[in-house]
Length: 196
Ligand SMILES: [Ca+2]
Ligand SMILES: [Ca+2]
Image 1 (cartoon, rainbow, N blue to C red):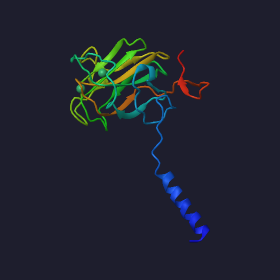
Image 2: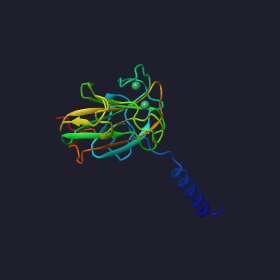
Image 3: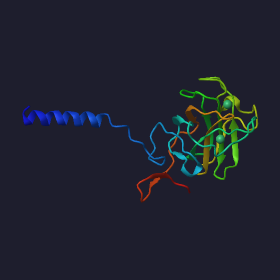
C-alpha cells in the first residue's frame, strides 16, 4: 500500500471514530434548549426562560427529595425539578398528558419557599392512565387543582413526581404566558434567570 493510500485510510477510520462518538452530556445549568430534562433538586433546578415551554425527560434513576399530597399520601417516587421566574403576571396551564409520558405521574408547583400552590396526581388518561395536569380542565374540581397563578418576577418550582414509587418518562407542556424571562451571563459563562 502506498503511503498516500495508507494515510487516506487512516483519515477515513478517524472520521468514522469521531462520527460514532457518544452525544455530549450537558450539565443541568447549561443554556436553555427546547427539550430539557428537569434537575435533581431545587438547588440545580433547570430554569425555564421562554414561555410557552415544552420539555421531556425521565424521573428514572433520580432521588425522592420532595412530595406533595393531593389525595394520596406516602409517595416515595423520585422527581425532577424546574424553576421559573414568571416573565408576566397570569395563569400557567401545565400538563404531563402528552408524549412521551408513560407512568403514573404527580405534578405540583410551589413558590420559592417551597409553599405548595397547586398539585394534581390523576386527571387525564393519555398517553397512559393516571397522568397529571394543572389546567382550566380541572380548575375548581379540588382547591389544589387548576391553573397556577403567577406574579411577574416571582420564582416558582415545578415538580414532576410520581404516585407511590412510580417513575418513568415524561413530556411537559407549560402555556398561559408568551414572553421571555430576562437573563444575564455570569462570570462562568452560564445563562441564568435574573432573580430580582
Ligand atoms: Ca417525590
Ligand atoms: Ca398519578
